[in-house]
Image (tube, rainbow, N blue to C red; front, top):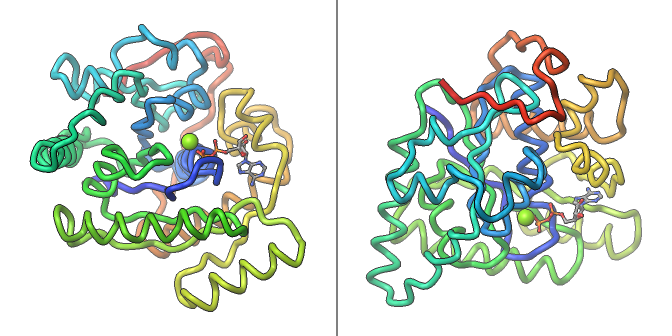
Length: 290
Ligand SMILES: Nc1ncnc2c1ncn2[C@@H]1O[C@H](COP(=O)(O)OP(=O)(O)O)[C@@H](O)[C@H]1O
Ligand SMILES: [Mg+2]
């Protein structure tokens, strides 16, 4: 059974999508784990980062919305590009419509049914599922938490982030009570650290408040994260394809090693050969998950 997880916080710009995409790339590229990213953010940033803008634009199909509406299965809609063990279920603007369910009972039914669909319909071949969420505490964050076995808080060391972390903890409590009592926190991952007195103060704050829970790796600001997004692939895969070293890939390997330890997942031992050139990376070569 796949381990379902999300890297999240109730704040935009913290690095949820960057972490999701790059952790997925590292799980697939460095550990050979068969990894599926589900883009549950109507902005479709994870889809654009992994597959390119064509898939994130209105009109591409099938997407996560087609799966929810019964027109496609996850296996049919998942797109494999860049690497043999990494798939993306493209997001859709249509996901916004689900936010309209204002009354609590209806929202509850939607969250329950989508979370059950995600838990039941993940293809057997998949080892890890990462769900990318929007910054709000709306229905898609709740669905992701309701479907997940674990979640990781992405915290930037500043006071705006602290309030996003507190809001997330409130949402997690509610989701645990209403839908998913087994949900576990994998930890707090500090991202976009800069060596300043404010940066150090917030790292200390998180370590004091949650002594066991803060990842050992504190992720600094690294420009390559933005540039690899332009390449439409995670930094681990960028390194493997172009046989270069980036200052970010080893940090993601540290983060992923610690995350795997925290959630109790092991690598597959063998990593598939990266035959991206034969498959035409950068071209619109698409393969569907088995
Ligand atoms: N560690 C980092 N170093 C440099 N830039 C980063 C880092 N983490 C995220 N970013 C950049 O910050 C911006 C917001 O990141 P993103 O992952 O889209 O955040 P979110 O999904 O939480 O809104 C993006 O431009 C991304 O490239
Ligand atoms: Mg995002």
